[in-house]
Image (tube, rainbow, N blue to C red; front, side, top):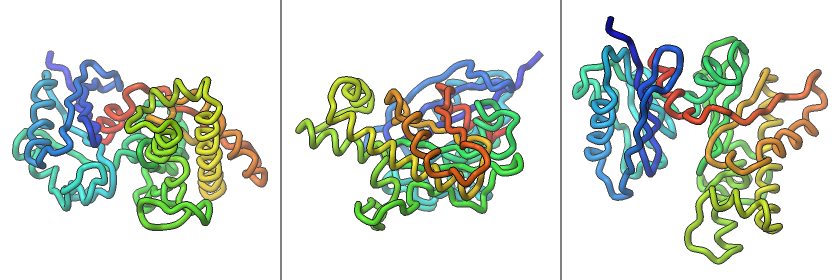
Length: 290
């Protein structure tokens, strides 16, 4: 008997992570394809097609793609992904469906993450969930009453929490200017006089280097302020935090501690957890396809 599967694709700026997912939310097979920084739009789309064909097995019900930035979900258009320079108003759904002959759905990666947490993650069976991704930037997806809230932009990263640091968006005091992976990396590189550094290196250094530890602690504190604001606005049952920065031990816990100092007006403390799903990008993307 032919089995049914989904394919989830997490579109990053430096790589494509794709996986074959069964209907119970288990990743059966996965692959990663690096993206050259100079790769053309056509080349990247060709890589997506290659990944799907490589993973394809039995009956594929749909392909879900999570991509950073604004997405026109109904028409399947990637409006201007910040990690894919040169992409603007790309009708990704139509292009891929023409090539693959499989239904394709596209959504913002934070929306995908929130849906995955709601369906199969730590927020399973909860009705009001906020999912926050802390990568190079910061974004969020919101599930209210068991439904993804598309009327909310989810741009938690550009919530004003201060009036000093300039953000990459041009605004002053955005959360992203204090807590994002890009900002943490920039500060640590300056501290250590290094040209490049990975989040894995920073996670190791934060255990022994007091100055790196302070940079991370400040970022976690700022994130806690942002999460407190989300909690006061939405009063969710849970806020799940994922992304590369959560690889730093204690980062999410420190943010939770700071947030709960600031939500005392609420009846209960806000539950802030580190997502424990290793393949949240793949699972989140596949979740929107089913």
